[in-house]
Amino acid sequence: MRKRRLIALACVLAVLCAAVALSLADAVSGGPILSKEQLNQAGMKIGVSTGSASMLIAEKELPNAEIVYYNDTASAYEAVAQGKLDAYVYDRRQMELAISSGRSGVRLLDENMDEGVPIAVGISPVTEIPDFTERLNAFIRELKNDGTLDGMFQRWAVDQNEQMPDIPSTADPQIHLTVATSGVVPPFSYYKGADLNGYDIELAYRFAAWLGADVTFKVYDYTGIVPAAVSGDVDCIMANLNITDERRESLSFSDVLYTEHVGIMVADTAAAASGSFWDNLRESFTKTFIREGRWQLFLQGVLNTLIITVLSVLCGTLLGFGVFMLCRNGNPVSNAVTRFVTWLVQGMPMVVLLMILYYIVFGNVSISGILVAVIGFTLTFASSVYSLLKLGVGTVDRGQYEAAYALGYPNRRTFFRVILPQALPHILPAWKGEIVNLIKATAIVGYIAVQDLTKMGDIVRSRTFEAFFPLIAITVIYFVLEELIGLLISRISISFNPKRRSPESILKGVKTDD
Image (cartoon, rainbow, N blue to C red; front, side, top):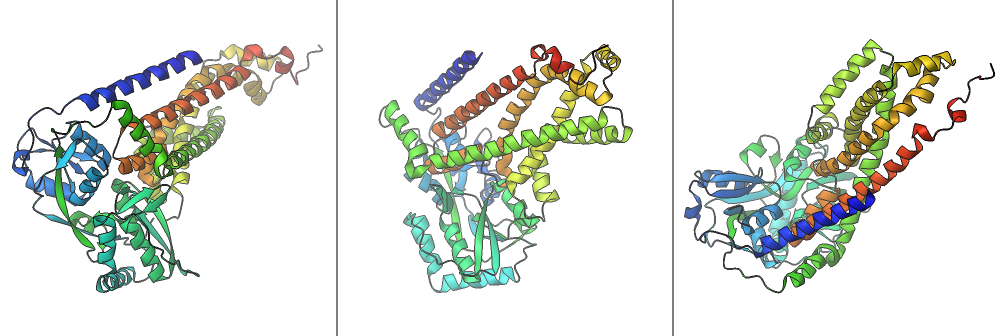
């Protein structure tokens, strides 16, 4: 069985490598796009960043085209290069940086969209820092007046200088500043090695020093970054945040920091592959794992994934078993409550449950995203364990109860000594499957500011602008984790096999002298 799993894993990797090789060799079909006017027609697919001002601009200026929404820029760049999108509309400077950093197969049109995008700091409506908006704007005005703000933009965005200046921290902070950022938008907020870097990160450090505060960063997807501020999980957002009318309905903004042009990325049909396939593969591996010690990001992602998985499995199994014990003798109140909670949890998409817990239930509580993830997955896993126990115990013939009672077993001992050992072989394979599903389901915890394995892959892709090795690495690691879990559960299954139990262990505590 184990050998077959390894062979299957090797086959999957071979298919993935072949698919990537074919995609690298394929040329983008169709003629080149030379102007914005060509995009404003039926059948054209225009990618945009979900919830951004560039999305609104594309919908307004290209009304005849089909708009396709993306949560991360790296995936959108890849879609343009592969011909899945006719164009991607986004901040021009970030797309220029991506191309200069090695993102091949794409180019920018000379013309931009008509409207520009103002960038500012988003401010939580429930921040506990007094006079936050006034103090933030006073700080920004000081930086503008002494030229610091222009100098920061010149260093990060124009010169692409990635060196974070030495900013003294507050010796005895009286205020704690919590800043939401994205971590995937160079040169404004991104990871350099295992540390956050960029224009917005420097701005946050400078503001904390000016305010006499210490600072903590929380990394969110853009789909969750505004809800985090609205709920009060953070004090402000520094993440190259676009000002939009709908966002103004939920939170206020600082004075404008700068205005970005909105560029148009299209496929570069004239681009030729440089170097051999294996040379490119070697370079991609180096950029993904070696450069800036990015393997540390994957390691941290694996650790967070394992923490969430192990704690959720343990707590979920105990909770599900405890609930089953309360309900197994037919208590009407316990059964009614359990049926309702199970229906509610199992019928709700996991990502929705996590976001409700994080942004609503614990919205006003300072709580770790990992803890919220453990709570959410514990609830879903417990409901699965409860259902599995009902099915497994239901497979045991009623005659087993009667025989145990005839031997003098009380009800509880009958369950633990006779019924449960016979039910477990029916339960454990499905329990193992639920654990495997749980491991894969943890890929959504990035929505609540947790850097799990999948989120770390997105962070690396935002730096390398390549999809191959980050995604392949994530796939292989998940396969390895699932294989290890499978081996562990197989060992547990053997130890609980009733056919391996001795008569003495079964009859322990029962008088058999008569």
